[in-house]
Image (tube, rainbow, N blue to C red):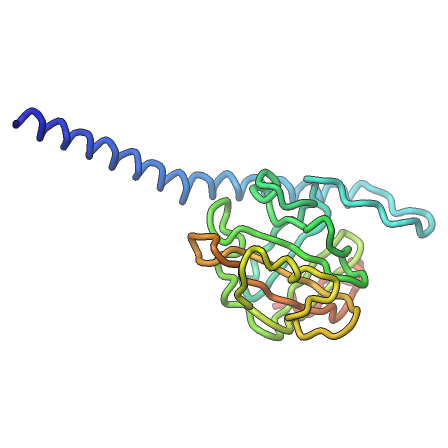
Length: 220
């Protein structure tokens, strides 16, 4: 009997150790690797913007390359050091390296709904403090040539994952009634689950050439 009890105790200890190690991996190690991956994506963008020559004359918009970064997002409400790369697509591998642009949604700064997803927890926790976003908050993006400042109009709004209409060109529950230059941000809820989604909607408030300096929302 004692042997059985000892064996069960040892098994419980082993299982407990495995669970602790898994928790450490989930909470810490994936975050460290994700932060490194996001920093690399930001470096890629800065190097590209530094070396690329702008087109001699306006051309048709170049499609965003799947899985590749094309913009950087800043959200002062989440901290003045908070900035994340935006990549094309919302595949699991893509969201491990930053925020993901819904491919079927609009383009940055253009008429339509530029929709972006991010993890609430794990892989760097980019949207951990998403519930703190409020109406009037600035969400600033740059594509290397222009600063785009959006202002939040509504949210965080809670819905279910099947509610894909939140990224429509004119999201029905956003309060918008016609075409515009909109931004949608989405993340999971609750903090460690994925049964629901949190949404915020914003509209383009201002643009500014990069050479003119940072927009007012990023100045301290």
